[in-house]
Amino acid sequence: MEESRDGDWTLVARKPYFGLPTACPVCLPVYIYLKFARCPFNLEINSAYPDSDQIPYVEGGTYVAYNNEKGGVIQQLKQDGVVDLDSEFSSLPEWVSMKAMMSSWLADAITYELWLGSGENSAKQIYYSDLPWVIGKVLFVKQVYDVKQRFNISKQNAEKKEEEVNISIIHWYLSSANTMSKNKLFHPCRPTSLDADLVGHVLFTLKALPVSHFSTLLVLQLIVHSYVPCFVLWLIINLLRESTYSFGLPLHD
Image (cartoon, rainbow, N blue to C red):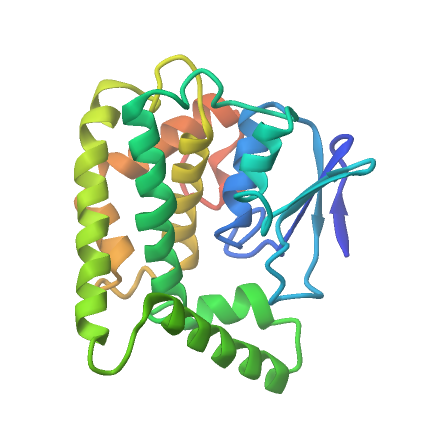
C-alpha cells in the first residue's frame, strides 16, 4: 500500500501511471470530484485486488462508499450528504441528459477501447503489472471475455459494435459542443460531477491510451473536437489550481 496524506477521508484507488494520480478510468473522476469539492482526503493505492469492482471507494471512520454499490462512489457521496456538487443542477433536463450520455456512451467507449481496442498494453499496466505474468494474463483474458459478454460482441457483429461505439462518441461531442462553447463549465456557477467525469475522460484518453495509434476512436475524436482538451485544461488550471504537470500534461500554466 502507498499512501498520500492530505485529510480525514481516504480515497482507495488503483496505482498512478502515465503521469496521472491514478490511472484507473473509474477512479480518476472520483479523485477529481473530491478535488473540485475542496474535500481534504488521503489517496491510498491498492494494487492487491486488480479485478475487484469495489475499487475505487471512499472511507472515513465507519463510513464507506464502494464503487459497486448504489450507483457508484460519487452517487453515494451525494446521497449520503458527504459532498454534493450537483444538488442545484440535477433537476435541469440538459444537465441530466449530458450526465446520462457521459455515464453510458463515453464510459462504454473507454471500456471498449481499453479491453477490445488498442488499449491492451494500457490495461495490463493499470491492473496487472504488479502480478506474476501468468496470473495477469488469465485475469486479462477473463476481463476481455466479460466485456464482450457485456456488449454482446461476437465475431459476426464485432465490426458493427465498433461502429456503434464510434457513432455514440461523435453524438456526445456534437451534443456537448454548444454547451462548452457558451460556458467554461457545464453549469456557469461552479463545477459538477459532470465536469469531473469529463476531465477524467479526457486525461485518461490522452495519457493512458496509445496516442501514436491514430485510428484509436477516442483519441481521434479529441483531435477532431480540439475544444474539449482546451476546456479541460481551463478546468485544471482555474479550478483544480494545480500545475498541469501534476496530471501529466506537457503544457505550461
